[in-house]
Length: 375
Image (cartoon, rainbow, N blue to C red):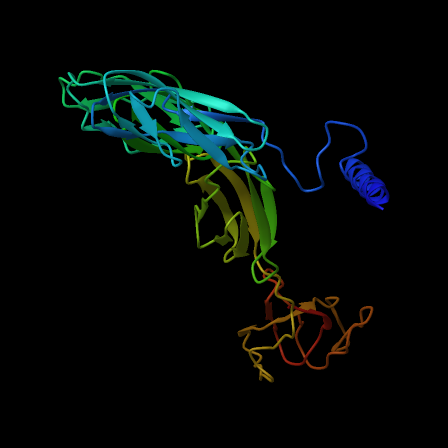
């Protein structure tokens, strides 16, 4: 019976291992779905100096940052010289050197900090940076300076690190280089005592240009408004804010909401609409031509609805144009011209058409033909 039980147990274990192998992708080297294996670990600082009885902190970072199991363990290679707890806190015990090692639970990756302990040293009390904040454009660089106190400290060496090398890197002498837009933190750590100071770095992408969707537009007073769109380059520019303005608000006004603006015609003439970036004062413009509003004719009126004339040759000004009739007298009657009315009575009749809105009648009676009404 015992033999049968062992066989059943062996078969169950084999089946479980087979299922695990399938879930890991079949062969070797795979990982369970959703599991991110550890690929390495590092310590900061890599060297530390302590006075006997003094302590310091060693920090660690497991890679990748999204590793599923980040558990580590700490160990001293010489507990007579320095000890370490499971948080990375080191205590100096006696003169000498000790390697402090951190090991990842997943994969067994290690990193080491060399600790020097002495009873005859001037300990570091603090470290500071010349700048706590730094703003750089991508591609720019600036050097940070660390000051260790006291000035006569035995070990004034420091190490530099960054929490995001994709945004900003730092060299062993404190030179910060901006890589891409974002935020990063630069840390300086003293080898003695693990004293630290920080600088927050902001990396921006500067504006290189701005262009408008139109270089010119035509509008009419009282008619539809126009639309403009500004495009800021590069597309990943950190500050894309712009301002809008008009060279002549009596002709056209502009109101902007971010990168879009509305142009309103206010009077006949020409105005220029400007856009300017907040970063770098890059500019572009659009010429706006505004036409006067079209007002249709709705009617016509005369200054008089009736008039009386005399034979004294008075001149009457009106808004009608008359054509002179044919001159001449035949038996006391005026001859008819084409389309002319008859005239009775003595004297010739004639019209003075030297002005389009003026006529003169000479003699009694009436003679002439209506030609047109002036608008």
